[in-house]
Length: 457
Image (cartoon, rainbow, N blue to C red; front, side, top):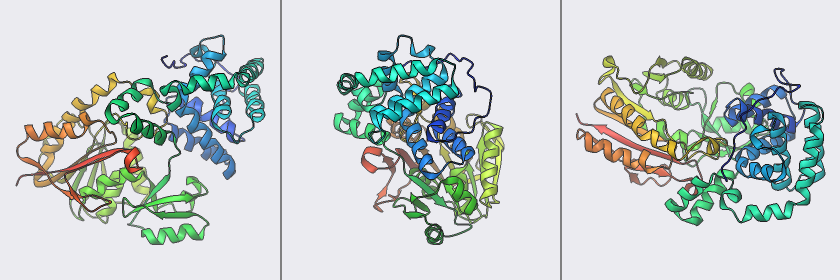
């Protein structure tokens, strides 16, 4: 059955007030409310809530697991609600909807949480964050669910979409693309907790020095096998503490996302263009690789996102980044053949990063996938004209869709005989490849596509 989105908003006793969470469950509730009713991205909402709450590490970890898990399992939790309530899911009060999701997730997916605690704490949330009387409704739904848990679990096991916590269309699409075994592995990867990876800012420190600094403050980290500047954090007091301790030394970035800048390999003194830059992870990476010399022109279509780029550049003490308000689909004459290297990290369906972008699996549609190839093509056409003769262009996406990746490149090269693919070293094997397509279920990192194009002299 199709997943229903709760759209109707009702006033609650806490709506409009800034509520500081006092425990992990309250933090998770605030995250869900922001994700489903304010259209926030899960990691951004989670960081925002945890930063304001000042919780102990155990509560932070619990809130992170609970919020991410409940968002990822939305379709299955909606199914359970529809079975166990006498009203449409879409008409539930926002706070009640999210509280029930959190309670159901603990009951069905967090074995270490006693079911009594899942029920009682959900009731307490309803008393604090909703109207009088809703606590009895929440208690009744959860207690009734417990009585029918075995029956409901059997229904979930018989339905791939419910079992794997993904939309039905996506499970079917991956089954056709990869086969059932790999489709299941991809869903399991997306449902697993994401690792915390950082990119060391080599303008301010070295990777080894940063790792030593981490160890001295009681953190654990290891070298990324994908990127020389990458570090995987295995024990941490949280990003806020790390930023306070080492404000200029790192940028939070997925390992796959570090690769486009590495592959483009910008040199000190060059003119580099980042066509779709916000929030600036790849731009700041390129600026650091250029040792703060030359220029990185970072573009976006929204002023507030340009501010994010500037804020990140300032924090990392990078002085060779300049921002431009620019739509990648609109040609800019004065940029024609101006840049030595251009990065097109194109807008895409994002189907390779559903592990980290927990809500995205529920906001995307199969029909919506068709919007991206045409948009990417327009951006690529302009980007190609901005490259100097002999210069390089890296095209990358965070999706695993061929129409947005290899087929996009095939079409581009057919239209532009003056361009050719340029081989580059695979980041793990050293093998020279013309393109790199990473699949989460095979490579154990986010799904990403990267290729390098060179313009004839």
